[in-house]
Image 1 (cartoon, one colour):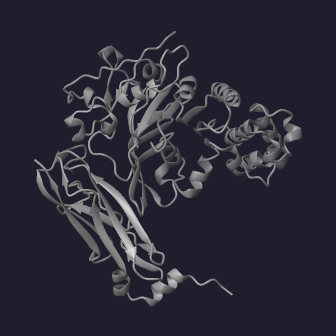
Image 2: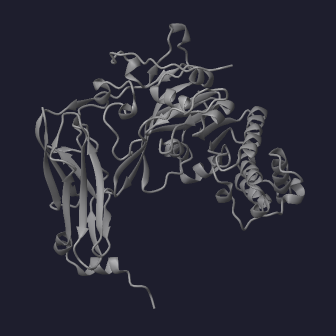
Image 3: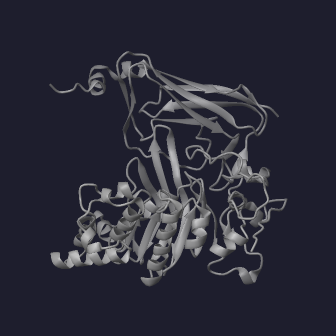
Amino acid sequence: MALLEVTDLDVRFYTEEGVVRAVDGLSYEIERGERLGVVGESGAGKTVAGLAVLGLIDAPGRIEGGEVRFKGEDLLSASDERLREVRGGEIGMVFQDPEEALDPVYTVGEQVAETIRAQTDLAESAIRERAVETLDRVGVPDPRERYGDYPHQFSGGMQQRVVLATALACDPDLLVADEPTTALDVTIEAGILELLDDLADEYDLAVQFVSHDLGVVAETCDRVVVMYAGRAVERAPVEDLYYDPKHPYTAGLMASVPRLGADRDRLPTLPGSMPDLVDVPPGCRFHPRCPFAEEACTKREPPLVDASETAADARADSHQAACLAYTGDLSGDLDFEVEVRE
Amino acid sequence: MGVVDWTNLSHALLPTAVRRRAVEMHLEPDRDVYPAGDPVGFRVVFRNRLPVPVVLRVESPVPWSWSVDGIDRGSRVADPLPDDSSRFEFAPRERKAFAREWHQRIRTGRREWDAVAPGDHVLRAWVTDRDRSLAAEATVHVDG
């Protein structure tokens, strides 16, 4: 049994514009200690998928179908009280902007302590001690002295370390990290990613890492799910995905990543934009942007199927892609290739 | 002194029939004739004709819907809107426009769509209130 099993998740938002199908039939699992990257452009549904796992979808959004099982327990039918126990206890959360995540009128130490207080029966002195230890663990210097400082007295990078401390204070099994470094500059980002890596190794922490940045995911994750317009279009171990993408969308994303030593004047870009999720195209949702699209792609939605080239490659963590090229319904071939220079 | 909630006040004072007549609705395709396979773009436009706020009580969290040739949202796969009531609110003389594209396809299964035959096709949109009488439609022609 995987630590987290998400099956056929369906999240919709009912608005004046229409029904926004933010996540549509999404399935994935995360094993203990595994780091899963969820990547895609803005509006692909990655953040909503993370919020659904945490039971944090608010009106006008609704989870309309599917299952979210954490250690075998169905979280979608859990009570609010049970969900509060799970959040901050067994599942930690880190969001993009630390300034929004931290309360400006409480000291950082109090904010870490509050998480521990909500999840344990420890005495006040023990709570404070554990909060200091957690701040130390995430690399806040002089944690005992800085316990009483307010968020505005910290830099952005240090604020994100404090957010990590609140997420990790109760030794969760899973961390949902939604673009945790997007608001930080690159040198600070590298430090946070390294810290996340160390903590995940040290505490056998599983991570659902949501990002639009393929480079960051390549460095951080074991496996990757690529999302497009609310659906998973490719799932693979990270190296397979980067060296041998199977879906034209993933290949397009890869081609648009700048690489050192490349001799191109301009980076290729994916033509068009993500469809409006109120009004997704019929068939394959990527077909209006796909250079390999055929008539069949406008009439049939491809399921996520094994795209391994040989039977020997097909295994439990196989390389899957949602393209008619892998169901035998496409008359042409996908003739893209990705060149990786060592 | 408390602030007057003009939306609630107008809702209380205007009878349902007046409110419905206060809002006019149009369905506007971006063309009349489309080559086979080209997306049919259309806008559904609502306008409150009155100088006071108007609220329509609707039977779904989505205040309007559409069909093509009588097929709800171009799909034969049942996918009903939730039947929770909600409000479709307009400020005085407010105009609201929503854009849609119909790709000349009818959904026939969970993962299957069929292309429509060339000829005339009727697009219809309506407010999701109880009697669905506030509606608009337009006919577009798909070339063979």
